Length: 373
Ligand code: MRU
Image 1: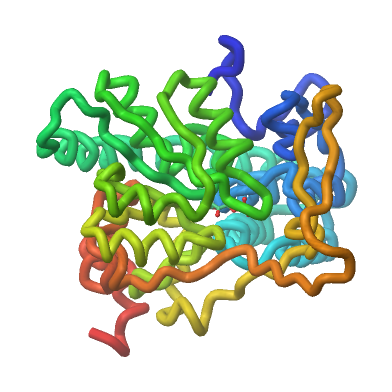
Image 2: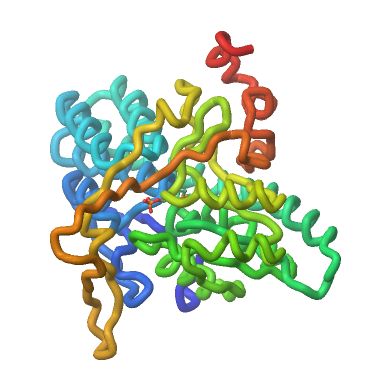
């Protein structure tokens, strides 16, 4: 992804200054593009908790570097285990975080302590590279779907209208994104696309991050309130919905940003295809019931009571939008059951959101289905 013509990833290492880890501070966007240097595992945990970095694949990749940063100071088993536990507790819903940390621990344990820090950086870099390749593949498979729907449109001069929720773009991954990857590919391939961007309250990742990304890449888009999607679908202004995911069960239920479920319900009522784009690192093969088994993060009430924006003087400020002392709830994710999902777009191809569909792409996971097949 390029910012003002300069290629960026969402996380990178600077080996000139002692292997520090750099991120884009996403809490500053869209108003200011600022990067931050992380030098300790505690920095990494704080960046994840405060959502300076966010998005399921990205928090996994940054956490992997968090382990490398800790091992640079002390590479004994205890540090490895304690750092893994600390990072694991930063956010509960996205399983990519767990998978990345588990992968680092499994890889590093057999390596002798004096070689561990270097090995950790290398493994974290591999996680990042794999994420990029995965997202490119998701983009290519998703492009086929977009082209097919575009060809079926009656009004050929009308753009293909795609609705997305939250931010599942390059900022949520190391590069390219998941749900946005097919959109970038379609735009680059000359397809006439237009994106409806849900603002995505309470933190407004759609309005602040997805709109910023799409604008940077020159993709036509319109930000809408979270409640506008159903209306647009009823009036045939949405051809397809693509969203990302934070955790997917082996049966095809998905957890994604709060409000995704309502989009899926409206999509079903209006026969709009509802696709979910995800890397296989987002699949939790150990669980089968999304509603029961996926932990939903409850975030601070201030995200609901206050809205952050830029005022007329150019200052970034927070304003309160509810009466004082009002009780507030802030579940950050919801579960969309598999039966509302048209299909999953993965790096291995597309499939139905069913055990059979998922097994067709990942036959090596058969052992997880012994009870249900
Ligand atoms: O709370 P966030 O901003 O981390 O939530 C992000 C999402 O819900 C994304 O849609 C999901 O992580 C997929 S990112 C490729």
